[in-house]
Image (tube, rainbow, N blue to C red; front, side, top):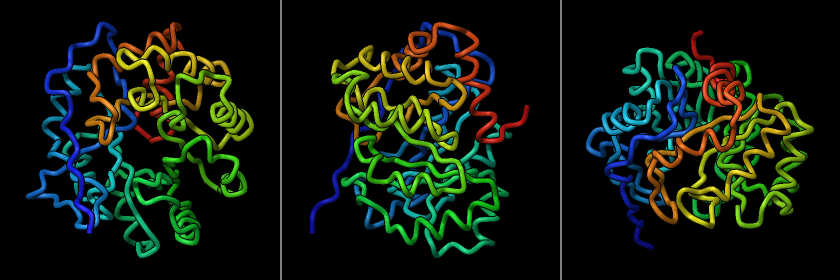
Length: 292
């Protein structure tokens, strides 16, 4: 049996960003891990994270100027979503959640998650996280979540988009592609994978994209300026279905980022304050259902 790798903790002292986020700015992709003693990690997890509890996330958000967040339940917690729903309950309406569910979840269980502030569920398509999900399970889950107005969050590489085109075209609900489709930033906007992502985004109004994971797709490293042309191209296509986030505490990254650098990318992506307002406030409010 292979040993479960342990991943590094987040940056211990990220700098306060030079860019001041607007009121109600939302981090649309972050995680809470543990503490393991209260929210145990599952035995078959692909990696073991260091505890990154709600208190640490709240400290990070205060330093960055983030007022709202969407907590994405990551694979170490399996199908137990309590770590997310407890954080939502403690947030005073500032958090929403993305759950991990499968075909074993009843309509009543999904309804309880929806009542607790969950607005979608996630499927991963990366080999290191288990590879392609069982598509019959995927179809069953989509049917069950549709009546609740949920969307599906897809950790799906852009290079595989064409293979999944029939599945995406047939979806009756909104879907969100994580981390700019995990393209390779050094190949620029003209690479085949990014062109496939742009084409998908242009032609399918159900498709949203997260401008997250700059530290994952960058080849130049901090402060990740090689990602800027990709974000600008997507904004040119349509700024109304794009979302920003940190991906804190950054599981499985090549090098741990300083979250201040990630915030300071925002004005480079979107020099126009009106576009920044969409990315940071208006688009998340619309998709995730935050109160006005």
